[in-house]
Image (cartoon, rainbow, N blue to C red; front, side, top):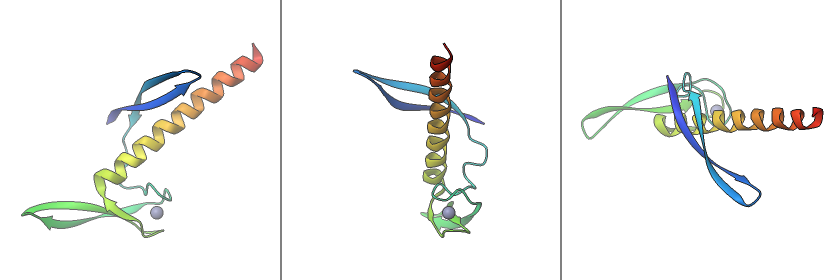
Length: 94
Ligand SMILES: [Zn+2]
């Protein structure tokens, strides 16, 4: 599943909201702190089954949606870095 993500970008005097389509596969199961694989632990809150994320490597734990959201933002930032570096290499060539 792909998720449309918005990130603020700053360009000289201009602020923009960049739209980035991020592949959300694996974002719930990988740790947003260290990148290792973790596990989802079920618990019951207000009569409903919910899950939280726990990292097997660093011990980080949080709401599974919060962890996935952090991973999605990280992927979007990585994408922007790649685009920025390819723009820079084109400028050097051109
Ligand atoms: Zn971790």
